[in-house]
Structure formats: C-alpha cells, structure tokens
Amino acid sequence: MINKFLPPGDWLTGIVSSSHVAIGISRMADGRFVAVNEAFAQMYGIRREDVVGRTSLELALWEAPEDRARLIEAIRRGDAVCAFEARYRKRSGEIGDLAISANIVTVGGEEYLIGMLTDISERKRMERETQLNQRRLDTVLLLSDLLVFHQDRALRYTWVANPALGAGANELLGRNDADILGAVGARPLIKIKRRVLRTGKWERHEVCLARGEHRGCFDVIVAPEYAPDGTISGIVCAAADISRRKQAEEARDAALRVIGSLVDHVQDEIEAQRRELAREVHDEIGAVLTGLRMKLGAPADDDRREQTRALRALVDQALARTRTLCTRLRPPVLDDLGLSEALRWYVREWGLQTGIRITVRIATLDPEPDEPLRTDLFRMLQELLTNVARHAGAGKVAVSLTRSAGQIRLRVSDDGGGFAAYRKTGFGLLGIRERLRRHGGELNIAHPVRGVRVTLTVPEPTA
Image (tube, rainbow, N blue to C red; front, side, top):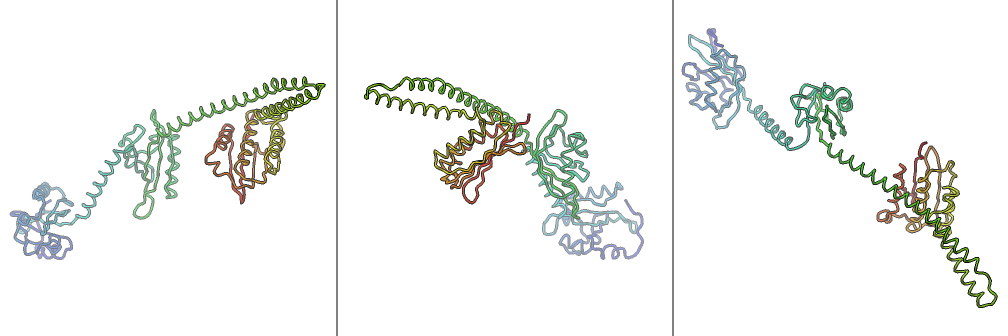
C-alpha cells in the first residue's frame, strides 16, 4: 500500500526517534537510509551515524539479500506487509530472525520505505527445535509399533502417529472414537478417557477393539494434558499393540487346559488302577494265603508242630502285608464308608505310626462328595501329613474338615518349625495344587507364631 501524502512537520522525530520498536527509513530511489532509531541500532549492534546515508546491502544487514527484493515486490503489489519474515545479520556476524511490517510513504514527492522490525530469533529458535524434536519423534515412532495420539476435551483426534485397526491418520483427525469404532465398541475406551478428563489422573488398561474386519488388543496409557492456566485441555495417549501377546496367551491357556485335562485323566486312571489292583491282591493273593493258613493244621509230632507254627507265622505276616498294600493302594474304607470316615481312620493310623499327638475335628459330609473330589481330598491329606512327618519336627498336629457356604475346607496345622526347604524343592505341594486346580480350589499357607497352617478350600460342584 502506497501513501501519496504525509502531513508536513517533524515526522522523523515523531515517528521514529521515540519508538521502542526498531524502525528504519530509507529512500526508495536508491535504498539509502535517511533515519534509524536507537532500537534499530541496538538490534544490529551498529551506531546510528554509521547507518544513515548507506544502504542495507552495503551494510550487509540481510542474511539473504534477495529477501529485500521480495519485500519491495510485495509492497508494490499492494500486499499488506505485517509480518514479513527474514533473516538478518548483526555487526558481529551473528544471524538472527526478523518480522518486518513495512509501508511506502510519499513525502515532498519522494517515496520512502518505512520498516518496523521485531527480533523473533528466540521464537524461531524454539520453532526450529520443536520441528527438530517432532522429526526425531516421528522417526522413532516409525521404527516402533507404538500408537501415540492426542485428543481434545471433546475427545476428537487432533494428532495421530502410527494409527492402527486399518485407519489412516487423516481419517481419524477431527473424529472421535464412536465415529471410528461405533458407539458400543468405543464405550469402554471412552469411559476411561472421560474419567481421566474428570479426575486429572493417568490410567493404564488393556483393551481389545474392533473396527470392521480389523481387531487388536492394546496396552493403553491415557494421561491428561494441561493448558497454561492449569485446566485440562485434552488427553495424550500411547498404546502398544499386544495382539500377538494376547494370542500367545490364549494359545498357552488352551494348551494348559489340554495338559490339565490329560493330567486329570491320568490321575483318574491311576486311581482306577489302584482300586482294581487292591481288589485283585485282596481277592486273589489274600484268598490263597487264607486257604494256605487253614490247611496248616496242627501236626501230631513236635517237630512238625514247630515247623507248622513257623509257616503259619509267615502266612500271617504275608496276610498283614497284603492288607497294608491293599490299603495303601486304595483304602477300602474310602469306598465303603465315605470320605469323613476314611480321613478319621487315616489320621488315627498316622498318629499311631508317627507317635505325634493329633487332634481331629472331621465333620460328616452329607451328601458325600463325588469322585474324583473325594479321592483328591483324601490324597491331599495324605500328602500334607507326610510332609509334616518328614519336615515339620512337630509334636502336635490338628486336622479339620468342614463344609459351609458351598465349600469344603480341609486344614492341617502343626507346631513344628515349618517346611520351607520342602516347599522349594519337593513336588508334594505341586501335586496338591494340581489336584486343587481341577476342582477350582485354593491353597493357603500361613505361618503363625509357631508351626504352619495349610488350608485347602474347594467349591462343591453345583448340580
């Protein structure tokens, strides 16, 4: 814009000298400065008297001289020049950045260029650093699978890096999660983000999302973004794609279920074989030994009477060992009288064999637990008491079996020194945990002032 008239008077003093903004006035005809103010001189690090009468090109004030030509061209086109950016050179050689507002005025029939200059070096430095950091971040993000994005308070996407689920960054900008995932699919994610906006506390969650045929699971961190006045202006989120990990976990869980089923099957087969073997030993070998004893009648002479007594003693010993073997394989009392009576019998026999005082509080379970729970509870008690005898050094043991609120609870407590070493190296508790797993049970090990208290809790199966 060219002003054709400037009122007469001391326009140099009034416009230039008193301003705190750097101002320079040059003739359009030859580009020589006719006046600059002190702010101009300080900005360039030059004396005012060294400027007047010379051109900006002679003084090498432009870092790129063609910038002056572009400025003049823009003014002559009639363009409003309010923030023309260029680089300038100080007297020291240091390069800075300028924002120039300029105009051509006519005084006494001659054109003058008036420029008001603002040093924007710091702002431009920060912009360049921001751009550099952004490029670095973009490069890092391109080399990762990390999805990073920003949303405003209305949860509209304003910036996205590494978009997922088959969406492009431009497709996401300005839209919200409901637009992209659908109202139902986006609901869990929106709930998390709104809570962060409300509380100002960051959260981390695993979420699985679907968009059309695209599906994925993500480890998401949602953090609030604060405005300069301290209010929450939006959220910043980072999401790691954990779809492969989740698939691997699902495959692992499926394999563990198969292995668990095989273990259960093997355990049931072992118990069935024990039961069958105990029956065969009892029925066949026991019957043979009993018949042999009956045929060993009392002979007439003393020599044969003594031999017969020795043979009968051996047969009695074989019968006793056969009964013990049958009991160890599968106690008949477990099948004949049920779990509670079998536990009472075993605890009593265990106390007699070990010499450890034992207190028993075993409730009668009615109805009786089904197989294989009945067998597993019996075997777990065997293992726990074996553990006490081997490792606890106990003088007193308490055993209880209770039923309440749809759960069966078996507890063994001792006053010994514990069995930490066994727990680290043995397979007893591992076997107990595996038996509990098949029934959805829990193992709890407590350490009172003295001794150890082990509690097994198993939910009863519903009909």
